Length: 249
Length: 310
Picture 1 (tube, chains in turn cyan, red):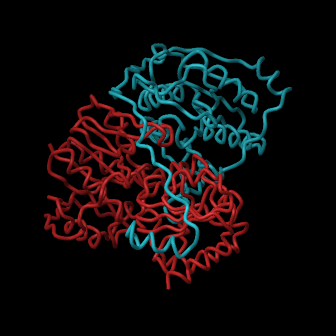
Picture 2 (cartoon, helix red, strand yellow):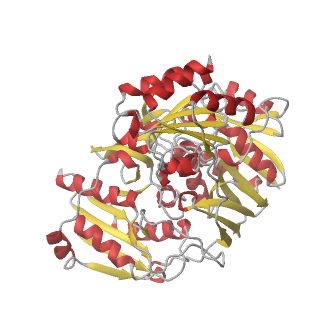
């Protein structure tokens, strides 16, 4: 079966983001960009399915600017077979991405789409669920275990207070949570190999999708800063402060 | 203009997160209705009818709605969406699972995890793990919104007297099935709803050592949490994790024990009213957000603290 893995190019998780002075967004010029960590877990899971003989082909797909090619090359270096870039300079919002991915899925006909539960830039946590809705597929979000057998996926999900298991028909969408797996390191030989793997370039118009943004960002600001308090010398002082000053106990 | 809130419930009781979503819905400017979709969920519906500010409770009761499968619940919401200008759910794992499906079906760009309502079409939401706040305006006919519960006070659970109305349940989509649930049973309050939280980090050293936090949590009626480092080290279960990739909490009192204060942890707890840090490293970043810090060995300080609390 074919597995489609959408990946997003985001500001690297180690970068301390800075809000632009003109409040139009956060600084992304000259900032290290990487694959969204949750998507990396998705590529890893797809590779494990392939190595286990369950998946036959892994296709990574990214939507966005030309530089998303780098993110796709990372996916290819992890082991994906080929890549698709849906290229546009428009600022894509989750609904637009979901429509593009649904269009790609209709063309490619995968049995499984697996992607990160959220991207660490806009923290929306929407795309996977939206694609599933647009395709009329079932979904299993926040997966910590995925088992594929007999045309169904049995997925353990991280929910409030513990774990929940659902069984969904294929084709389906699965979104990854942190503890699904630990992605492998990409080796130099695989980076070299990845450069020769096929990367197809399409435009939103080729897919017949209108990607115009629906949400207008009026401003982006810094959150109120929390100032450091005081260090207390002993436990008795702490308890006195909590009782009399903070009045929380 | 009327808002529909998707209730979070277990059929028997209404979960507290629903109350925060009701407050956000009321701020959108119109009447507030609540949908309870479940199976034998009459008790939860009655609880929803008591919530202050709720004008009407819709109940969709069917066996295939019992376990909040996204495919079925989303279809139920979409079937009722026509009458509403705003559709909201708490940004819990359940709300996050269901609502984007609703938004896509309605061709609306969802607004996730709002922390403030500026006007009926303009909302504030954190991005980059809370390191920036975006004010966004929606051009969609229907606003589909998840609500960060720590951003809004909960509506009063009693004092309301809403009409309860049954609605026709949608058919089972038949593409997904609930298998099982393993929920840890605990006498302690839920992390998301607790007034006091005692959290341990990598400094605890082992899962066994977390036991020394229990008397402290007992004394304070606190929920217990942990940093990602402690969870990744296997000290405690995943659902204890407070942080960007775990739960976002804002209790009255947050006690961080042996937690250094990685950005990803701070993103999950920095809105707490009062933060106490106990750490042997005086330079630990946690002290930069703590109201009260004690530098020292947690294995001495925590038992002392329990004793001092009487």
